[in-house]
Length: 121
Image 1 (cartoon, rainbow, N blue to C red):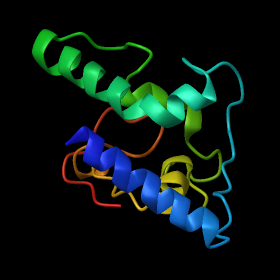
Image 2 (cartoon, rainbow, N blue to C red):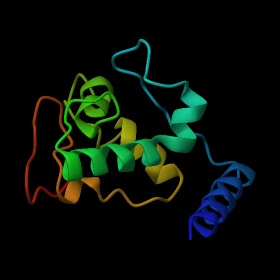
Image 3 (cartoon, one colour):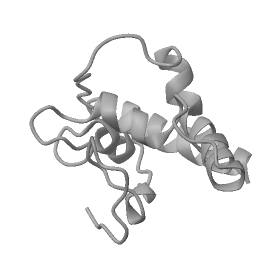
């Protein structure tokens, strides 16, 4: 399943690149040291979030560096406070790669908020 998803992702991003589609305009609102190099984050951020989700939900471990809240706190727009919307950190890349963001079905996309059940972007 993961191999098929990766193949689809690569096909979609390659198709966009060959079609001359501009790469997403990513603005780092809080520049500094991320928890991993950019290339690793591009490839593995979902795995990091899944592992953290499992530790939080099954073991009660909260506040680790790979938590969704920590990502949002660093990458949310200083203007909107969100990672969604036009030029939003998460939305820009996921739109470019044609990947649906379903994190926000349960989680708050704005910095400084612990949760927002039922929030729809």
